Length: 291
View (cartoon, rainbow, N blue to C red):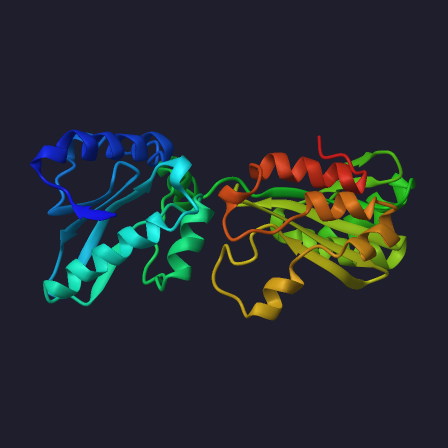
């Protein structure tokens, strides 16, 4: 049975509010606001659940908390409490309820969606250090890796493209050629004409990893870890910048499952390993050396 909380229920209301805060932790960077709890009205389901409201505008109330003890969940208590909240709002001349729900609480999100709530805006957060790193721009660097053991031939051909003697390192089945970041793509393409398969692998702005794979002068695959890092792209272009494990496996003998697992894309660098780590992981998948 749902009832309006009175002053005599203050201890119970506080207990349920505390239980909610223990179970549904707030973001770790926020100050503890448990003592700031001061809703306009609360409703109780005996001692099993609580909903508290505060008026925020002429047309809407804000649901400060909805909490049901674990042992009472799945019995309809949450819905009964929300119905009481809605009836109160309507009686006060309001026609909308708003609330916050944590992204990592899928059960709560599904419940609210089921009873008619929908997202009207999103609050997002980012570490200040990450924003400063992006704003200031990190290092851009990389190399071209040519699938051959003939380091001398690669050096000769690279010198023709760069009009300078490049630093060349022989690895295991690949030759690495050092070049300025803005020269990597063209160098990889030109070297693939004579050597067959080459890849330009790089870190851009200290934030994203890119590779461009060539076979005999044709670009056959391009990957960027954060496709829209430099700006919004058409959906087809975003998809195209995902790794193609089948092509990579065919040309480099890489394990396609590892390509798929490591060369992932995301909307933000924060969703992936640090760029330098990802750079080395992808190099390892290809079997090339970056140090």
